[in-house]
Length: 188
Image 1 (cartoon, helix red, strand yellow):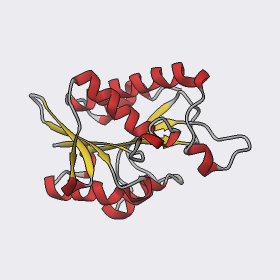
Image 2 (tube, rainbow, N blue to C red):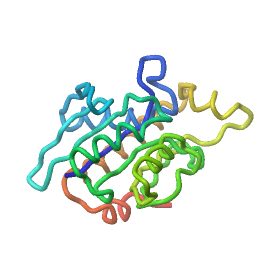
Image 3 (cartoon, helix red, strand yellow):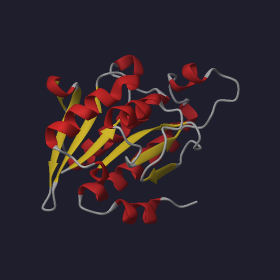
């Protein structure tokens, strides 16, 4: 069994915030593969299930707010007994340029509090992730920046990047290894 987690904050107020790009990627993936998310109270999240000949994959959008995402992820991982190498977490990254994304097999949270919560709750940094670039602000407070919407002129670029990231995740669902996906998408 595999698990894809998209990080974000629940509610329409946050829907198009930079911090919610993880939710945006999972929403796009759900549209592409024709699955619907349902609220699952026992996991504090919205979930969808995808079955293929290779395996079953759960898509999870924690509804705990970003900084407590680990609570929801741990509940799902423990319940379904999912190994860490079968997880991929999608989240925003200030250190990557807007329009870029990178897949990594492990590492620190890099200041991303949702990922930090997951690392803390699971007790390891050995968690694969897909980092979506949102760039650093020039002068704006970081918290205000990540909780602001993408500017209109960036929407075409963001849409294209979300589409490519969802394609990469579709390969993961269909049994490709993370190394194969990294070889295809982690281009300079």
